Image (cartoon, rainbow, N blue to C red; front, side, top):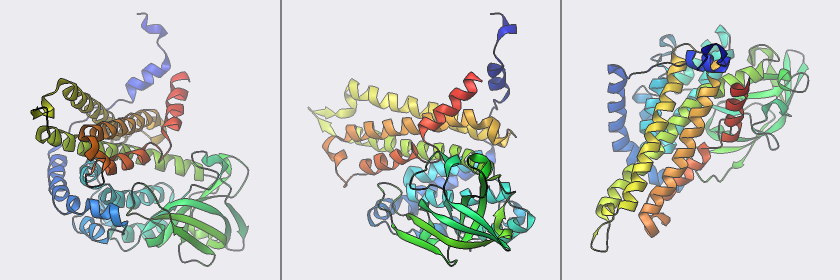
Length: 397
């Protein structure tokens, strides 16, 4: 091959690659979290899904174990853990209970946004309380007619004396009913991505109206609802970052979150595969364990192959961020990891249910829960179709 004619994309892809190997400290935290997952976290998973009640006990457990503040700076009460360490924790928890790991996502999403765009005063005002579990946040970005197309958000922030008046409607505001603040995005200028800005809004501010809790098929214990901003006053001191830079804040925040979405997929896939293997060894048909049938063995093997391939993509996508690659530069690799891992988790959970046969179709067994929860991961933090667009644009640049 004539190497002088290789594309710049191939060179960039090579240059952004980072090798990873789990440290002794990371292996120790995995073991510690695994014990929690196999104990109190997993024990209540089905009940949390069934009732949809907010898991305050799990929030307090994560806080007591020092997991809530894992990526925060030491001065804010955290451990300054990297994205890979956070992904390892998310994977272990999700294997046992999707709703428990969801609590970490609801804490780390505003942490990323405020860390990226906030000034020193804003970070000191919000992050220590968030790390200590004294403050809770919701992120309100999706609108009734706008999901992945964030550049066309309709919510407006009009300039008034001392700040802004926010008017608009958001949907799928996760954690909103139990939160103290929103991180939200509104239009302060021209149409398109250059006209968006980022704000912190108190959930109890005059003009904030929360709708009913949405009836989701997964993540049921973490409430999501519609939010209407009706001329809500927001002081200028609660705008995160420069005016007109909100799209960049949102894009970088979601890119940092996507390896963690991939880790949630790993957890669901692992949990489903573990259940399927155990069931196949125990269930008997035609005078033998169903695990003895080659056709079923191949299904299990394919599930394991997909899981391991997903794991390496997700871990690598986290490692490149920890290695200093910017979210923008890492976005194509992260898009690949998020897409592959979540698509694979969907397939694994469906196949695991199939191995359970009619029992898998019953809510008496956990397989339908794993399948419901996996579906959402193909949609959140940028649909897998949007991720493919990101990968294709980089490939063709």
